[in-house]
Image (cartoon, rainbow, N blue to C red):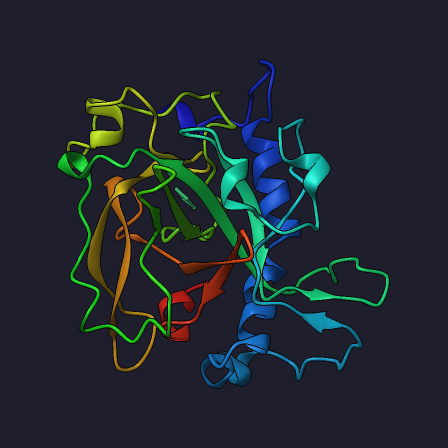
Length: 261
Ligand code: FES
């Protein structure tokens, strides 16, 4: 299997670099639990969070990526809905703690993958949002018919072993195309799905489904981007979003969607 090698000499980020980045950023999940109401589950396993001065924002803010990317010079600024070309994606943080100088405090917030998909309902599926408590104005994706913009935001922690899946930033090894489920993102648009290079999992941003998170008690339903290639066992949870002043704001449907790392 290509993923079993640690050697990745071609241009771009390697699997080893990716895993190292993931380990360095692994505290994101702990920060998420400490700042969100999901603290109840993880508190038993974590030391109490140190109080830190600063501001937590509900807006999604760009985060710099380890390799050169189009959004890197926007780090720590709001993710604007008009920033994205079709199929463009970026990394961001939601509920991150920013100190008084405007710098993100390491280990805080929820890592997020934001990407723009086509507004073609033929190949786009999502659950009925009505039964879910999404919060006022929030939706399963940002959708603007007037500007023909649809943006999906996902929690950027793989449901396999909690690496950080990416969007079109890693090609070595390339994602496998022996999908468990036909992904319209690739089959129709010839774009690779969300890809976790650690062991090859993939998720389709066009297919939002209801899955079960077994890592909380009791297990809970959540909405996520469908897992179309293992070893991930289930969907990548979405972040509900709405626009405020041209920027994307995240909404907490249920903190237990994100507790599994
Ligand atoms: S952690 Fe993502 S595929 Fe294993």
